[in-house]
Length: 225
Image: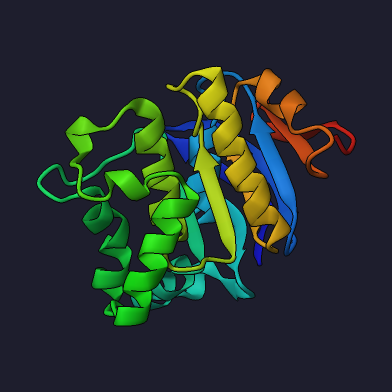
């Protein structure tokens, strides 16, 4: 699916990530930890092709990223849903319209997809907020809308960058449960987080690997939760 081999990433002459190798297997669940500035967001960007590594190789679904054209990368990224750290919406569009944007951009908006959209909003608990606009949403509602938008195209992989960073513990638990449900449906999940309580809360719900970025390298932080 997604594979990094001896990957390094440099900015401004300084190396942020070094000699990183990882394979995200189908149906796997990973937590990615590390201090602020360690490179978690950069690592995720490498995983969905937003950045090219300074050294090493990134493969998306069996193809070397360096050999992929812009259209190839765009097609591959339809298989990867991303929940960004600071969620961006178009404020003049409703929640439903924001969530459906990937469908419109890809030309896959159909009547069946409209039915799926309503079901998806219900699944994340936003059915009654479909016509609201982003400025009217709470932090937790924004994160759930972001997750809905990330999975609207039925991706094989979901990458979430600090998805619970600005919401309370109860809502964090709810969002975690949604991600666990996606994993049980066969989706590959990676959550970048500094919240160790969130990782502990996953114990008993899902088999997960905990990875930590430290001193520019990727380490296994623990066995299966």
